[in-house]
Image (cartoon, rainbow, N blue to C red):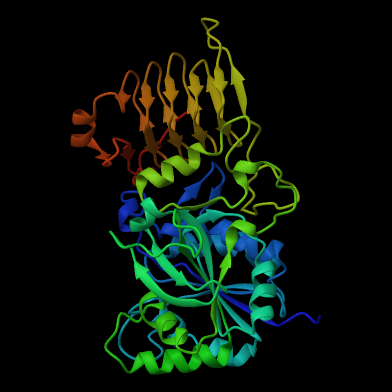
Length: 417
């Protein structure tokens, strides 16, 4: 079977308001993840590893950090035929910014007309997962579908957190439920589970164009889930693709099969990072057959050292990125970004520290997310007194303390080793 011509749009323009303050200065897809990555790296790596090499990344809100990261990571890989190109919001069809996900594609549909693909892929940039996109493409072709929706079976009791796809026994999509609180439509033959949309779609170009044009003239949400897909369901040629059956080379752990996280809240973001650190992680970053690609830095190696009083630096069941120094401190169940420094007597537990964080002598941190360039003073404590933390920082509903990114490091250096 000949290979179809594929064009992918990555939707990377969301505000990410539920991830505040991590999204105070950056778009949600640019939020660091797993020590050395950004969230957007996962969907782009999935595309690259699947052989999908014509990719437009659509941005809108606070895009500078995202733009720089994508250009530095993927720009050198681009050729005339293979490219990852940033497309900023341009008001091409009127005087408004993107009014919804569908309007975002509608305003940039000239790129489809120029490229002339056999299929248009529209994927979100807000999720952490591994996916062989070619398997979804093959499924789409086998069904002669006008649209295919990637779905993940979830317990029916959790359906209120997702857009639920209704199907018949053949896998044809018959309707949608937006975060239903009751009367959940379950999988035919399985009353315990429902199909949650992952926000990843494949379209036939002509059908997509006609649906977008019709929607642009109506007073709607201009959204794929609310408007475009329901209109295409009437054709009888919209199907769901079961992501739980997607096979990734090198994946052997049962727990990782079908792993997908919408890291849209502080709690889900925190939990997804914690999924990385165990001996047998729920989500494994160490699969050389399906690498997650990110920007490379000329950092020195990491090290664990003694302090002057012979106190041993120790790191247990944690991820430590390049350039880190554990100088007599104790770190357990954590994810450390680049160039993190933990001084003597400091204790850091169950936390995520972004790049260039300095933890002073005797400081204590637990269940916290510390953004870039923050200096934690000697003897300070974060995550131990949430009432105190709420005055100085942000505390999530689940009791996770988030310390916002330091903004003035060019005037007052975050650390001086």
